[in-house]
Length: 358
Image (cartoon, rainbow, N blue to C red):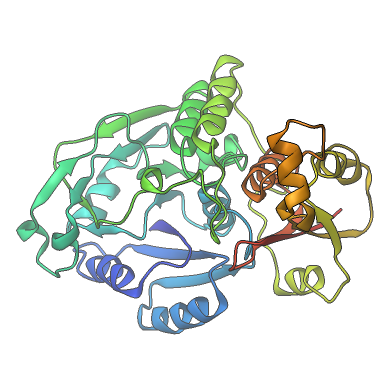
């Protein structure tokens, strides 16, 4: 048996159906699926959970990472903690599998060699159709550096404590795990003999405007941050990462306790107020839930303030909410990635609520 892990959040049912239906058509049935729902909106998660019941080989797991930045590493690790087979394939909800894929995986199993696969990318229109695998028209192919879809021995992943949970949003987690595995004495092989995996089109994370505030939390320099962490691990020959509780999911009870009624502290966007909160209040507070709302100071919109700014008269200094967003998210990713927290941008983009259990 081989376990397939799907990390998931808030994706449409059509692509899920395309992917799982291609597994139904496998010539080799010796596989199972762990479907990790990493904090989807409740309406979506309830719908997906019910939808997945038709697939007998799928185990649905929900972690209440709602209102937290996406972390593929954490979602994968939650699945890894539940794996009972010797080998695991890290999949993607966008993937359509060749009917012989599991058969090929079985032939490639090797305790010291992990295998990652070349991917065929479909265009937007092609992704909207349902076809026999061989009839799809491939737009482009992944290169050797793309290590996202891989077959691992569980022995190898456990030796390095899984994927690095530092990584949030998108980028670098796959290259990092293969790099650390090689330092631990394992090998990586690029399989490009045949195209056995097709990727359904969607907007890329790179194409999104990360320099504007949006309801979906985004960090402006996340790619640079993730690359810095990757290079640090490579330069320092780091093999093991994470704390011993890696792969921990958030329970419904933990989520409800964090989000129980409380009176949030209003913090205006004054620079000295925000700096004090991030540098002093946040690290110095213990054994309680911190609950704050970041808002713009109304004085910032007054004629008096604008005249002072125009005349270059010394006045109050402010951060934009986007700047606050980036400061807080970066702090969370670097220093508080293992804490229970809730980060929510109001739909009108006028405020940000942040809760963390210290």
